[in-house]
Image (cartoon, rainbow, N blue to C red; front, side):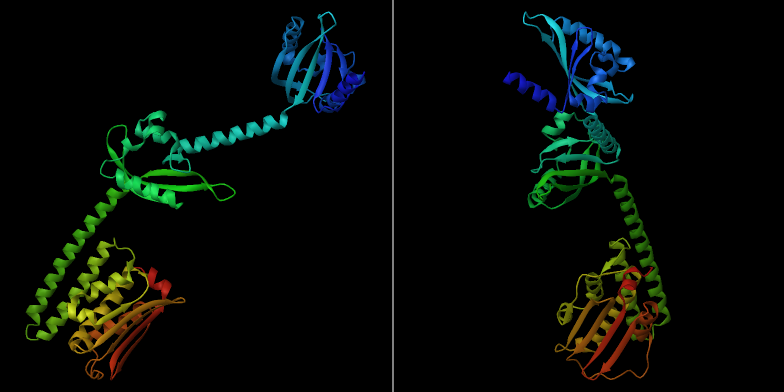
Amino acid sequence: MLAEAHLSAIVQSSDDAIISKSLVGIVLSWNPAATRIFGFTEDEMIGQSVRKLIPADRQTEEDSIIARIARGERVKTFETIRQRKDGTRFCASLTISPILDADGTVVGASKIVRDVSERQAAEAALAEREHRLRMLADNISQLAWVTDPHGSLIWFNKRWYDYTGLTEADSLVNHVPVHHPDHVDRVMTKFHDDLAAGREWEDTFPLRGRDGAYRWFLSRAKPIRDHTGQIVNWFGTNTDVTEMLEKEEQIRLLLMEVNHRSKNMLAVVQALARRSGGSDPDFLARFENRLASLSANQDLLVRRGWQHIPMAELVDAQLAILDRDSRALVKVCGPDLLLSPRTAEIVGMALHELATNALKYGALSQGTGQVWLWWEERGDRFVVEWRERGGPRVEPPQNSGFGTTLIRHIPARSLKADVTLDYAPDGLAWRLECDATLARTLAS
């Protein structure tokens, strides 16, 4: 009796519908969970056919179940569709077992029904998300891949296989064969060093395609971290940049050609100046030096692809006119700052003029002098200063020529800069201050 009471308590308190039926499908018992799941009360279902719970298009399932139970078979758990009292359908998990009498004869069946609608909805949503992610991963233009925390490859997208022609087994075992032998050691060393340090990896190198030809790829890998911050995977991509690099090379060659032709034009101008101003050697020397300054600026801009120019490189290019001893007297100090091409041209010409004057008349004309050149971004302002000390006594010029225009007037007008030029007796001082954003973005 105690065992029966326990069994009854289990049936009554179960979260799953537990139903017993005869071999012709008549409901013999009905627990509270069955009422909660199907909506029928016990009184409404006892003595009724279990087929009331089965949609019309699935009635043949019951025929098969009854036949198997009559043979004494247990129907293993399977998932199907059942319907509630109000006609709504839901996903159900069913397990059905034969009920035997004392002689072992099959007299009915017990059915356990679990509502798995929420689980199936979650699984369907997860499958849909996985499908979308797979579709995205396989159709992006990049080759994509995933590694474990230590860099061992565990997944590639379809683009990888399409490009390399490798099988999944070949790719996961060893991807080195697609690397160019001239680059593989460098690439793999940097890759594993960056992964060991936990920093994002980026590199550019060639990969061999299924046709045997190599193409250049910009490759990146980012760490994927869990909620504790530990790296659990690395996600990487390879972006084909072959055509971009080829175009960049074409542009570089074109700029070199333009640079060459413009230098030829400067040479023609120089020749004309010599013929026209041959009686004034000082004019010719200063004119040629200014042409050389323009040429130095142009070389620097071409090397940088007519992009932003580092201030330190600009200073080095313009002070190249000084010999080693004179250059040692110039103390340079300033942070890494980038200037627009137009700003670099204006500031470069001013620095060239200051260096030329210092070498001829100022602090660099004697071995005891010194020049301090420094620059900085002070808030939203870009500041450059040139100060000379230890040279001959300075006297203001009687007349201002083109040199003054280069040093003062052009920067003031073109950069909207505040420019001061102080001819102090103990040494010339020049200061330029302008908007820092303007100095970086001024159109060339």
